[in-house]
View 1 (cartoon, rainbow, N blue to C red):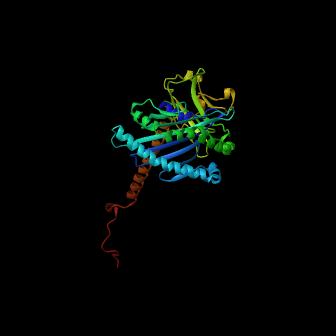
View 2 (view 1 turned 180 degrees about the vertical axis):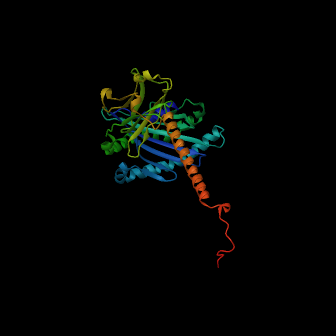
View 3 (view 1 turned 120 degrees about the vertical axis):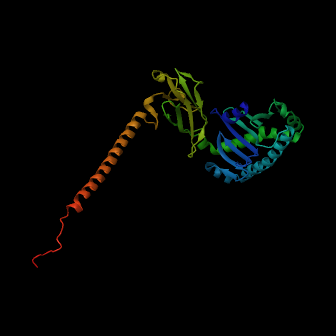
Length: 356
């Protein structure tokens, strides 16, 4: 699966090269997601998608492109619809061949091509993954399907005897894909080649939490970020996040550093480095952020401050209650004192005026 993920994530890393990539996924046994999803990328930027529930979804920057190329849009829709049913049947065949029971199964295909606009060199790829593992790939040297997985041998033999399929894949990799790539790139180069530098911040929830180096608002997507100690990249105590899209078309990325075992006097030996391949930025084409407690953003407050606040609030509350109770008792006693007791009322004579 490592090779499959590398092809998916890192094609198009070099500025002179441009890439067109298609990711197709068929999932069976899962009701919460669409059975089929197809996504297209140009230079790792998504231009559209199609899924079996909602149909096509064209990204804003590409609407005009497909309005001018309705035949190409229809070709994409037809291809996704065909692959949806084709992949479903392939999964059924693989389940029978591999003696698999019912459950969630996933078949993926990542295919595409690269074009170097300086040298004119073109290369392509087409490979499948099944249930999270590399399965079978099209070899451009022999123009045949190859695999290192014993469970894919039957599929390899079958596909290699299908000459129409072999011819189709050869034409796709050598001719169709590069043609589509150049067409997409020439239309989108004005926004595909824009460069936006990120805002980089250090974040931490509590003093015992990892320090997160967070970059947001950058473009293009081909960014890397890492922690260094004494100028050397760190691999231990580091957790790399994924590049995620923002709603404005830019991207964000976080890399966490576990500082629980780092002494406070050693913090100055650490820094976070952000880079975008092919983009000039500062010294060594990097944005470097020193690990410094003074610049860390956090919502955390010292427990002593919180306890002091709570203690003060409790004292005020207690005194308020005592004052209220004292006032009530005082008013009650005053009322009792002002009411004459029967023993203190003077006895009246039955004859109010004896002289009368």
